[in-house]
Image 1 (cartoon, rainbow, N blue to C red):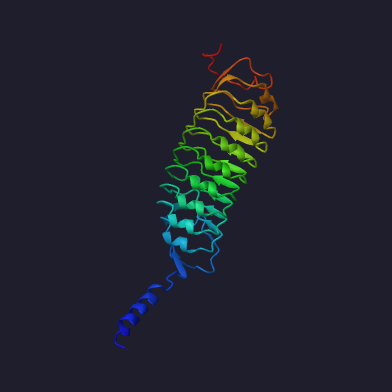
Image 2 (cartoon, rainbow, N blue to C red; image 1 turned 120 degrees about the vertical axis):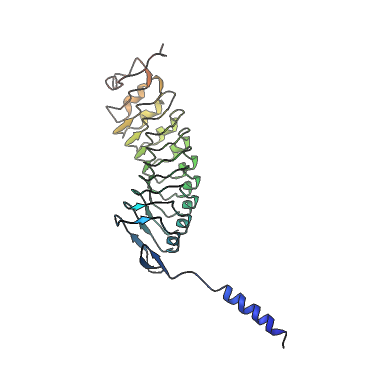
Length: 284
């Protein structure tokens, strides 16, 4: 019988070691929130300072997290990837730094991901391609580097994509042509190189296409003429070369911005008043 006592002691310790330690409450910025009952957390313009506590990842019933327009600093905690019920995540207009955590790819129910106007660095994680329910993706006004991941082409429900005002390099991935529901594609003010992919002509719902202020080369693809719904076409301030295709007259913007490239005459009559200053040094 005495031999059973050590065994019972071990079982007792195992039992207590397996006890559920998941918190029932989370304290954030001095307020206590019930894990079970909190499904929205809207602290927009609340004067919040400091970093986003990792404990926020315990509020697993959240569908909306809005911390925009505060003075939050530090990085986005990886624990945010635990909030798999989120449909809206808004952290814009803060002073957040560091990289976008790859765990953000766990948030497969997201429809809005707005991280713009922060000081985020590093590359856009390829896991962002997991967020196939996204309709709005706004990452502009940060310090993001690296290339646009090809996985972004998985976001076929996206209607709005803005990556402008960053330090992105590399070429525009051809997979962007898969995003056939896009109405706005804004990639301006980066350091993108390479040519405009002809697959951009698949985006027939586009109303705004801004590729200005990059280092794009090559010619304007004739597929640009497929974009009959355009009201804003900006290709200015690049290094585009060659003859402008006549198909540009088929796209919807009657006054596109094309200046400060290396485009060669003769110019299609429909846009000859809008070519502006061109460097024609290398034209025949």
